[in-house]
Image (cartoon, rainbow, N blue to C red; front, side, top):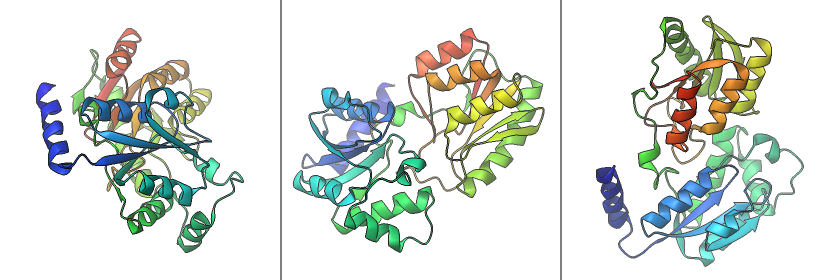
Length: 284
Protein backbone atom coordinates (compact mmCIF):
# COMPACT_ATOMS: atom_id res chain seq x y z
CA UNK A 1 0.00 0.00 0.00
CA UNK A 2 2.77 2.41 0.93
CA UNK A 3 4.63 1.89 -2.34
CA UNK A 4 1.48 2.71 -4.34
CA UNK A 5 0.91 5.81 -2.29
CA UNK A 6 4.46 7.08 -2.77
CA UNK A 7 4.40 6.23 -6.48
CA UNK A 8 1.28 8.33 -6.88
CA UNK A 9 2.82 11.15 -4.84
CA UNK A 10 5.90 11.19 -7.06
CA UNK A 11 3.70 11.14 -10.16
CA UNK A 12 1.74 14.07 -8.77
CA UNK A 13 4.92 16.02 -8.09
CA UNK A 14 6.22 15.29 -11.59
CA UNK A 15 2.97 16.47 -13.17
CA UNK A 16 2.41 19.31 -10.74
CA UNK A 17 5.73 21.01 -9.98
CA UNK A 18 4.17 24.45 -9.55
CA UNK A 19 1.27 23.54 -7.25
CA UNK A 20 -1.27 23.10 -10.05
CA UNK A 21 -4.94 23.44 -9.16
CA UNK A 22 -7.05 20.51 -10.35
CA UNK A 23 -10.73 20.58 -11.26
CA UNK A 24 -13.45 18.05 -10.45
CA UNK A 25 -16.82 17.73 -12.20
CA UNK A 26 -18.93 15.94 -9.59
CA UNK A 27 -21.90 13.73 -10.43
CA UNK A 28 -23.80 11.44 -8.07
CA UNK A 29 -22.66 8.79 -5.65
CA UNK A 30 -19.51 8.31 -3.61
CA UNK A 31 -16.95 8.68 -6.40
CA UNK A 32 -16.56 12.49 -6.07
CA UNK A 33 -15.99 12.20 -2.32
CA UNK A 34 -13.22 9.66 -2.86
CA UNK A 35 -11.52 11.93 -5.39
CA UNK A 36 -11.70 14.85 -2.94
CA UNK A 37 -10.21 12.69 -0.18
CA UNK A 38 -7.53 11.30 -2.49
CA UNK A 39 -6.53 14.80 -3.59
CA UNK A 40 -6.40 15.98 0.02
CA UNK A 41 -4.11 13.10 1.02
CA UNK A 42 -1.68 14.08 -1.72
CA UNK A 43 -1.87 17.79 -0.90
CA UNK A 44 -3.42 18.72 -4.26
CA UNK A 45 -5.64 21.79 -4.60
CA UNK A 46 -9.07 20.96 -6.02
CA UNK A 47 -11.82 23.16 -7.42
CA UNK A 48 -15.19 21.38 -7.63
CA UNK A 49 -18.05 21.96 -10.06
CA UNK A 50 -21.04 20.00 -8.74
CA UNK A 51 -23.91 19.02 -11.06
CA UNK A 52 -27.02 20.33 -9.30
CA UNK A 53 -29.30 17.53 -10.52
CA UNK A 54 -26.92 14.77 -9.45
CA UNK A 55 -24.28 15.63 -6.84
CA UNK A 56 -24.79 15.04 -3.12
CA UNK A 57 -25.32 18.34 -1.22
CA UNK A 58 -22.84 17.10 1.41
CA UNK A 59 -20.07 17.89 -1.03
CA UNK A 60 -20.19 21.46 0.31
CA UNK A 61 -19.04 20.08 3.67
CA UNK A 62 -15.93 18.29 2.40
CA UNK A 63 -14.63 20.49 -0.43
CA UNK A 64 -13.22 23.99 0.03
CA UNK A 65 -14.20 25.38 -3.37
CA UNK A 66 -17.56 24.27 -4.80
CA UNK A 67 -19.64 25.84 -7.55
CA UNK A 68 -23.08 24.36 -8.32
CA UNK A 69 -24.20 24.32 -11.97
CA UNK A 70 -27.13 22.88 -13.88
CA UNK A 71 -26.53 19.84 -16.05
CA UNK A 72 -26.60 21.89 -19.25
CA UNK A 73 -24.49 24.84 -18.06
CA UNK A 74 -21.28 23.93 -19.86
CA UNK A 75 -20.18 27.53 -20.35
CA UNK A 76 -20.58 28.32 -16.66
CA UNK A 77 -18.60 25.25 -15.67
CA UNK A 78 -15.70 26.12 -17.95
CA UNK A 79 -15.80 29.75 -16.84
CA UNK A 80 -15.50 28.72 -13.17
CA UNK A 81 -12.51 26.49 -13.86
CA UNK A 82 -10.76 29.23 -15.82
CA UNK A 83 -11.28 31.75 -13.02
CA UNK A 84 -9.79 29.25 -10.55
CA UNK A 85 -6.74 28.65 -12.75
CA UNK A 86 -7.58 24.99 -13.39
CA UNK A 87 -5.47 23.34 -16.11
CA UNK A 88 -6.34 19.68 -15.51
CA UNK A 89 -9.77 18.37 -14.55
CA UNK A 90 -11.49 15.05 -14.02
CA UNK A 91 -15.04 13.74 -13.96
CA UNK A 92 -16.29 11.58 -11.09
CA UNK A 93 -19.77 10.29 -10.34
CA UNK A 94 -22.53 9.25 -12.68
CA UNK A 95 -24.67 11.71 -14.58
CA UNK A 96 -27.66 9.65 -15.69
CA UNK A 97 -28.30 9.67 -19.40
CA UNK A 98 -31.96 10.37 -18.80
CA UNK A 99 -31.00 13.62 -17.06
CA UNK A 100 -29.41 14.91 -20.24
CA UNK A 101 -32.67 14.42 -22.12
CA UNK A 102 -35.06 15.28 -19.27
CA UNK A 103 -35.79 18.84 -20.29
CA UNK A 104 -32.77 20.48 -18.66
CA UNK A 105 -32.22 23.89 -20.23
CA UNK A 106 -28.75 23.96 -21.82
CA UNK A 107 -26.74 27.15 -22.24
CA UNK A 108 -25.57 28.24 -25.69
CA UNK A 109 -22.20 26.54 -25.38
CA UNK A 110 -23.87 23.23 -24.63
CA UNK A 111 -26.40 23.72 -27.45
CA UNK A 112 -23.62 24.34 -29.97
CA UNK A 113 -21.67 21.33 -28.73
CA UNK A 114 -24.70 19.03 -28.96
CA UNK A 115 -25.47 20.33 -32.45
CA UNK A 116 -22.03 19.28 -33.68
CA UNK A 117 -22.16 15.74 -32.28
CA UNK A 118 -22.58 12.96 -34.85
CA UNK A 119 -24.34 10.82 -32.20
CA UNK A 120 -25.36 11.23 -28.59
CA UNK A 121 -24.13 8.17 -26.76
CA UNK A 122 -22.03 8.43 -23.60
CA UNK A 123 -18.62 8.60 -25.26
CA UNK A 124 -19.76 11.18 -27.80
CA UNK A 125 -21.48 13.42 -25.23
CA UNK A 126 -18.67 13.50 -22.69
CA UNK A 127 -16.06 13.56 -25.43
CA UNK A 128 -17.75 16.73 -26.68
CA UNK A 129 -17.46 18.28 -23.22
CA UNK A 130 -13.79 17.30 -23.11
CA UNK A 131 -13.20 18.98 -26.48
CA UNK A 132 -14.84 22.20 -25.30
CA UNK A 133 -12.70 22.22 -22.17
CA UNK A 134 -9.55 21.61 -24.18
CA UNK A 135 -10.31 24.69 -26.30
CA UNK A 136 -10.00 26.70 -23.09
CA UNK A 137 -6.72 25.10 -22.03
CA UNK A 138 -8.28 22.62 -19.58
CA UNK A 139 -7.19 19.01 -20.04
CA UNK A 140 -9.58 16.25 -18.96
CA UNK A 141 -7.50 13.54 -17.25
CA UNK A 142 -7.97 10.03 -15.87
CA UNK A 143 -10.73 10.15 -13.25
CA UNK A 144 -8.82 7.63 -11.11
CA UNK A 145 -5.73 9.86 -10.99
CA UNK A 146 -5.89 10.10 -7.18
CA UNK A 147 -7.35 6.60 -6.67
CA UNK A 148 -5.04 4.05 -8.30
CA UNK A 149 -4.91 1.94 -5.14
CA UNK A 150 -8.69 1.44 -5.26
CA UNK A 151 -8.83 -0.32 -8.64
CA UNK A 152 -9.80 -4.01 -8.69
CA UNK A 153 -6.92 -6.46 -8.75
CA UNK A 154 -6.85 -9.68 -10.77
CA UNK A 155 -8.04 -12.91 -9.18
CA UNK A 156 -10.52 -13.84 -6.48
CA UNK A 157 -11.22 -10.98 -4.06
CA UNK A 158 -13.31 -12.93 -1.55
CA UNK A 159 -12.88 -16.06 0.59
CA UNK A 160 -15.06 -18.18 -1.67
CA UNK A 161 -13.91 -18.82 -5.22
CA UNK A 162 -16.40 -19.24 -8.10
CA UNK A 163 -17.79 -22.74 -8.42
CA UNK A 164 -17.85 -24.54 -11.76
CA UNK A 165 -21.22 -23.10 -12.80
CA UNK A 166 -20.24 -19.55 -11.83
CA UNK A 167 -16.91 -19.85 -13.66
CA UNK A 168 -18.76 -20.97 -16.80
CA UNK A 169 -21.18 -18.06 -16.42
CA UNK A 170 -18.27 -15.63 -16.15
CA UNK A 171 -16.59 -17.04 -19.26
CA UNK A 172 -19.84 -16.92 -21.20
CA UNK A 173 -20.76 -13.47 -19.87
CA UNK A 174 -17.41 -11.81 -20.58
CA UNK A 175 -17.79 -12.30 -24.32
CA UNK A 176 -21.30 -10.88 -24.39
CA UNK A 177 -20.58 -8.04 -21.95
CA UNK A 178 -17.49 -6.97 -23.88
CA UNK A 179 -19.50 -6.75 -27.09
CA UNK A 180 -22.30 -4.79 -25.41
CA UNK A 181 -19.70 -2.43 -23.93
CA UNK A 182 -18.02 -2.06 -27.32
CA UNK A 183 -21.35 -0.93 -28.73
CA UNK A 184 -21.66 1.54 -25.81
CA UNK A 185 -25.00 0.07 -24.74
CA UNK A 186 -24.00 -0.71 -21.16
CA UNK A 187 -21.29 -2.39 -19.11
CA UNK A 188 -23.22 -4.94 -17.05
CA UNK A 189 -25.03 -8.16 -17.87
CA UNK A 190 -26.57 -10.79 -15.62
CA UNK A 191 -26.23 -14.50 -16.44
CA UNK A 192 -27.91 -17.67 -15.23
CA UNK A 193 -26.95 -21.12 -16.51
CA UNK A 194 -25.03 -19.57 -19.44
CA UNK A 195 -28.12 -17.62 -20.53
CA UNK A 196 -28.33 -13.83 -20.55
CA UNK A 197 -31.08 -12.66 -18.18
CA UNK A 198 -30.59 -8.86 -18.27
CA UNK A 199 -28.49 -6.31 -20.13
CA UNK A 200 -27.78 -2.82 -18.83
CA UNK A 201 -29.03 0.16 -20.81
CA UNK A 202 -29.60 3.61 -19.27
CA UNK A 203 -30.84 2.38 -15.90
CA UNK A 204 -27.45 1.57 -14.35
CA UNK A 205 -25.91 -1.52 -12.76
CA UNK A 206 -28.08 -1.87 -9.65
CA UNK A 207 -31.34 -1.49 -11.60
CA UNK A 208 -30.13 -4.10 -14.08
CA UNK A 209 -29.41 -6.56 -11.27
CA UNK A 210 -32.82 -5.91 -9.68
CA UNK A 211 -34.55 -6.51 -13.03
CA UNK A 212 -32.65 -9.79 -13.42
CA UNK A 213 -33.78 -10.83 -9.95
CA UNK A 214 -37.41 -10.22 -10.90
CA UNK A 215 -37.00 -12.35 -14.01
CA UNK A 216 -34.97 -15.23 -12.60
CA UNK A 217 -34.28 -14.97 -8.88
CA UNK A 218 -31.37 -17.03 -7.65
CA UNK A 219 -28.05 -18.39 -8.91
CA UNK A 220 -27.29 -15.25 -10.90
CA UNK A 221 -23.81 -14.17 -12.01
CA UNK A 222 -23.19 -10.45 -12.55
CA UNK A 223 -20.52 -9.50 -15.09
CA UNK A 224 -19.45 -5.85 -15.22
CA UNK A 225 -16.75 -4.90 -17.73
CA UNK A 226 -14.77 -1.94 -18.94
CA UNK A 227 -15.08 -1.12 -22.61
CA UNK A 228 -12.41 -2.70 -24.85
CA UNK A 229 -10.93 0.77 -25.35
CA UNK A 230 -12.09 2.17 -21.99
CA UNK A 231 -11.38 5.89 -21.69
CA UNK A 232 -10.43 6.25 -18.03
CA UNK A 233 -11.32 9.93 -18.15
CA UNK A 234 -15.01 9.13 -17.83
CA UNK A 235 -17.61 6.39 -17.37
CA UNK A 236 -15.20 4.24 -15.33
CA UNK A 237 -16.88 1.04 -14.05
CA UNK A 238 -17.64 1.29 -10.32
CA UNK A 239 -18.86 -1.22 -7.73
CA UNK A 240 -19.36 -0.97 -3.99
CA UNK A 241 -21.43 -2.07 -1.01
CA UNK A 242 -24.75 -1.16 -2.75
CA UNK A 243 -23.80 -3.55 -5.57
CA UNK A 244 -23.55 -6.46 -3.12
CA UNK A 245 -26.75 -5.39 -1.32
CA UNK A 246 -28.61 -5.43 -4.63
CA UNK A 247 -27.12 -8.81 -5.52
CA UNK A 248 -28.33 -10.24 -2.21
CA UNK A 249 -31.87 -9.04 -2.94
CA UNK A 250 -31.77 -10.48 -6.46
CA UNK A 251 -30.28 -13.83 -5.46
CA UNK A 252 -26.98 -13.24 -7.29
CA UNK A 253 -24.01 -15.25 -6.02
CA UNK A 254 -21.09 -14.13 -8.19
CA UNK A 255 -19.63 -10.81 -9.39
CA UNK A 256 -16.95 -10.41 -12.04
CA UNK A 257 -15.34 -7.03 -12.73
CA UNK A 258 -12.50 -5.90 -15.01
CA UNK A 259 -9.21 -5.87 -13.12
CA UNK A 260 -7.22 -2.64 -13.29
CA UNK A 261 -10.14 -0.65 -14.68
CA UNK A 262 -12.94 -1.02 -12.11
CA UNK A 263 -13.08 1.14 -9.00
CA UNK A 264 -14.08 -0.64 -5.80
CA UNK A 265 -15.59 1.71 -3.23
CA UNK A 266 -15.23 0.71 0.43
CA UNK A 267 -13.39 -2.46 -0.60
CA UNK A 268 -13.06 -3.83 2.94
CA UNK A 269 -16.75 -3.37 3.73
CA UNK A 270 -17.81 -4.67 0.33
CA UNK A 271 -15.72 -7.83 0.56
CA UNK A 272 -16.85 -8.43 4.16
CA UNK A 273 -20.52 -8.19 3.13
CA UNK A 274 -19.90 -10.52 0.19
CA UNK A 275 -18.14 -13.04 2.44
CA UNK A 276 -20.97 -13.01 5.01
CA UNK A 277 -23.43 -13.82 2.24
CA UNK A 278 -21.22 -16.39 0.46
CA UNK A 279 -20.93 -14.18 -2.62
CA UNK A 280 -17.77 -14.52 -4.67
CA UNK A 281 -16.04 -11.53 -6.32
CA UNK A 282 -13.47 -11.88 -9.09
CA UNK A 283 -11.20 -9.46 -10.92
CA UNK A 284 -11.12 -10.80 -14.48
